[in-house]
Length: 170
Image 1 (cartoon, rainbow, N blue to C red):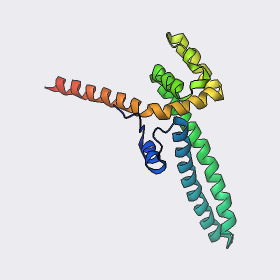
Image 2 (spheres, one colour):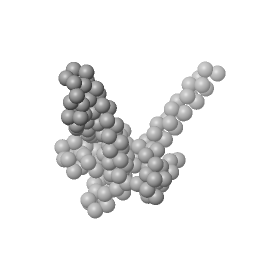
Image 3 (cartoon, rainbow, N blue to C red):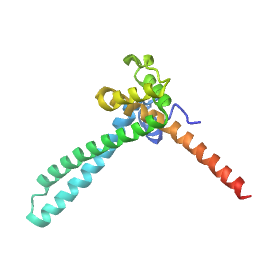
């Protein structure tokens, strides 16, 4: 079972660097986006500076500033869209697990009143997740803390499938 105190590699890094014991999903998302954005900004900035110096001469600093800004914005858009897509896939596969993590991460939002007892309830709440930015943001934060458990569930399924297939071969 995944250790709840260190939900991911990023969580372990935050714990080691900052002394934080339980990084929240929001904190993990922000840290991941900062690292991703900074690396994309650096690559795009250096590439733009190099290309501008080859094509136009010594205007590399302006090109770096423009390229790194474009890289940061592109990384933010891509990172957000990817996080939302992963979060919605996780909700579709494990709606109750994602709701538990949303409740745990956002205690003051009244999510404990949400019931997912029928397929209609799950579909109705998914509609809210897709169309309301507040709920979508909470889902992304909850996915950061639920991801290690989802990976563990999928690893167990894979191990069971492999054992079943190995048993059929014998």
